Length: 289
Image (cartoon, rainbow, N blue to C red; front, side, top):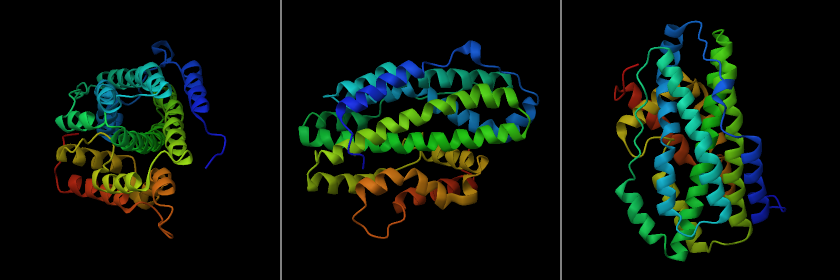
């Protein structure tokens, strides 16, 4: 755990993100596609899923306003001034690419769930609020790590197909903005542990809730979307080494939550959730390509 972590260091990281990675200029994107049908066949479901998830940032921000009533300046600046605008632009770019290759537009769901509103009411209690904030950081770190892995694989596959323009100026540009998001969540979660802001009973409850609630990005408890994610994971080749993928995604919480469990290679609920998504897709609970 880095000893130089501080609230100021995190705030400075967010400020640099905003300065160095503004929303991707639309004029910098080359939407030239050599084989629209081939891209649609191989990566149509990936585009559908990524565009939807990126465009659901409005829902995510509304949820954060509910879940983080006593938001820090770094948190507020990150999601309101940096992350949201970047993610929306990602979604706009991916959705235009979908249209260009003849696919229907994304259908984001930006309604805040009732369960989130209930948790938000409890988050006004300081002890509960700290638990919610830690879960927010852990979820963010896992989500952004999934994004990095997805865009890496997506870009590599497009380059193999000879789709240089969209690989470099669409997926490549989006990919470069995701590690900074991951770093924010990682630093923030690590700082909470470093400063011992959480009591043993809070950490115990965080472990229980994380084990019970973890799911891959963009599912929101919807079984149909679970199957969609399974199809995306297969299209990106995650199924070829699922244990490695799960280990990579779970690295932060394995270190922060489970380091006391000697020999734990990864939080097992992460691998299990991915296996369940693949099974759901293979059983046919999916969507059309």
